[in-house]
Image 1 (cartoon, rainbow, N blue to C red):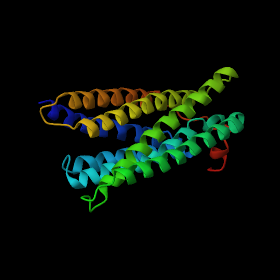
Image 2: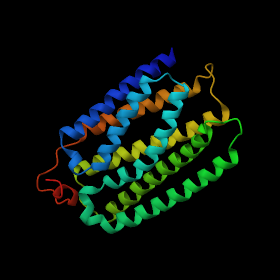
Image 3: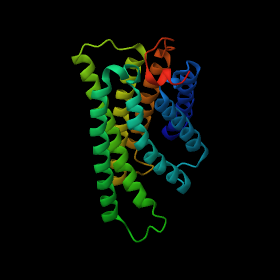
Image 4: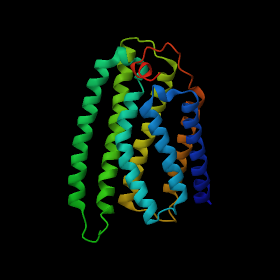
Length: 242
């Protein structure tokens, strides 16, 4: 029963992700938030692919693993985009914080490769287990690093008592909550990999349902709160895309 509820919640999640994407495109926010728009497109794309494949099949597993790797590199650039309307005021702080984030991600990627090499098994001819280990380590590090980046800029904004544009505030809160959910999902994945998941064990299904409801709530909030950008926005990215 619970598995069926989770299945229908996945359809609902895909619908809400589409709503957010259409909201971004309808308000023409892609002119300023290029990487956030990319994240929205990829999120909906992988939702559709996930629903079109049999759960836990080799194909589904392969798509899931490679999507983790892709999002590991999308998280930092989307986090960078959150403060695009304040680019002129936060340029130096944002660059320094992103350098630290990228450096951490590179170190974590190297650690993930080493860990996967040590854990490599001879009975894995496809190499999927190796890629799975790398992806979950890099995904976790990217989500954590991107969250730390947004928190650092958020603190800088509050310290300088800067006026925050409406969409910047919405994206900032949304991505903080979204990345917290991603970090929680990472730990759930680690737990399932370490302890296993059986049909009789309801805890992973309850956890998945909770995270899906959490994601639905914050995505709906974000889609409803976004507004069209003012035409006189002093943003470099907007001025370069008439």
